[in-house]
Length: 398
Image (cartoon, rainbow, N blue to C red; front, side):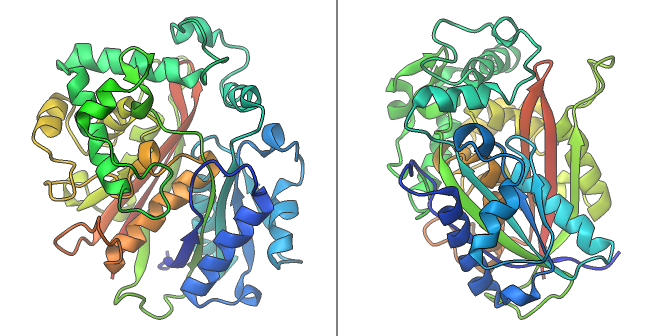
């Protein structure tokens, strides 16, 4: 298979942006990506557009990808919609990877964009609920507390249940949860695109409003609007920031079969296959951007990806392993908890942070030691309590 490169990218700020339309956010990210990569619009063979909430938030269905992207200066080329919950943008990158690997296209654009907020807060909560299997009794499955779906998204209750299980299994405390969350907030304070840049410390996180025990508000990601885009090509192009970034592998996987409840999670399947394709293992990574819709999800991702053995989670937290100057930095961008979580854009934002780190341009949050191998992985949706889909990309600096 021929080599595939990330030529460049760009993103908007993540945050509450009720005044900006999905088209505006998308056009801004696309313009930044093209400028950064030095690629012209006429060189783009196709667009893969990741989004999962537009139909429920803006009402745009059926043709959301061309309706959103054509005003950014495109026409005639194929524009594909990719919808896969929080993994939508990452899966769009996976589709682009396959399109170039097949030889069908030479250079394509990947866009992840989301308007997750609405003036009617209940509309946003209902949109998130629709990302779960509508035939499942998720209230019972998540052991939902009063107010689920009305004063918070239903997913908060699931994350709280995961947190309680992790605490029981690994001897974690609420302070441990706050400690690992604080790492992301320190990083996000230096990220100009982040939704939350105030940099709360451990005690601030513990003292924040409890949503569902043991989860405080700052242990969960905010609902964010934003867009991110990357140019993907079989042509390496000019070295930017002294390096080129190659996508060594790209995989998407779903949860195990319903008749195999003990089978691998979506994240485990995706990362295992991505490592095998790239010819590496977790020990060969220098850092990672992993999905942390909550602090519980962050710990789950570290374990399921093979980065951290489950029995070492507590030692990693208390030893500061995931900090920028730790043995294995995680979520230098701030992650979804602090950078923000615009579901369709999150997976693309992750790889943009990897690119920024490789180029040495993450001022104030730069990982020391010239890192050159990284993982970006994200999961999304829920079926039978398990994440429905997971996507993983191994990126290398050349």
